Amino acid sequence: MRALTLGPEGTYSHRATMAVADEIEFVESVTGIIDGVADGGYERGTVPIENSIEGSVTESLDALAESDVAIVEEIVTPIRHALMAQSDAFDTVASHAQALAQCRSYLDTEHPAATPQAVASTARGVQRAREDPAVGAIGHPETAGGELRVLAEDIQDRTSNATRFFVLAPASERQTAGSKATVIVYPNTNYPGLLLELLEPFATRDINLSRVESRPSGDRLGDYIFHIDFAAGMYEDRATEAIAELEALSVEGWVQVLGSYDTQTVL
Image (tube, rainbow, N blue to C red; front, side, top):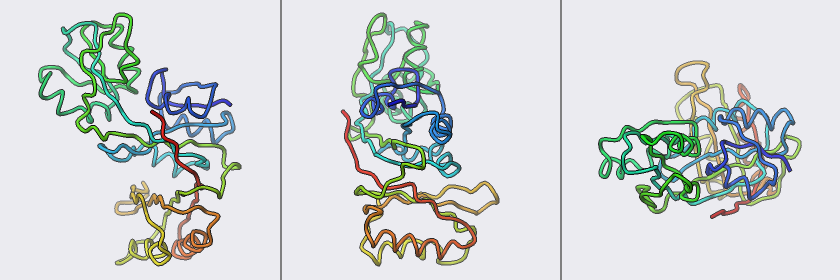
């Protein structure tokens, strides 16, 4: 199975994707992954959706709202960050922006003079550190070796650090089986009590919401798209009834069900 994810080789996205595909190719943007799956060029794509420390990955949310793909699985992977460099003599620390944020306290305490530098992925930061002795990197400790030394392990600010990834497939593979589901709602209107009305169809059916996120629609100030994850499969009557109510409330906009899925944990 051909899959697309964030590269280069060695990213946390790559580690998650190895659980679902044996032929993996890389791009350096979430939009590129989603487009690659939506146009049928790849059977699967893996995108980060939420980190337990830094929250949602907004690039993923925005790209999902603009494309027609299916979520077929959720992967949760614990994040173990290590500081790697050729020696102690580095003045820059390169990594993905989220990884830098997740290790902010460690860097401020142990390496306050080092300049954080955001790059496209943790693996790209490791690559920079291999090429330049003045650069350190934050990434998974298994990506060290050769000229790179692991100077410190488990440097993330919280030991509970974990990231959720969505495994995407073409829209034709959207499924109803699974213990969770995701829906995107664009009401294209705004009035007092709107958000309460959007959430009530789930509450009245005893459906737990695991994530509710609003993102600007881009059309006008104060206009929002809502991303909702809930603990029910689309094979359940209560889920389909709740979605029907959302559609009735969003007649000026749209409702997009991305599908049902189960969760796999990858260490």
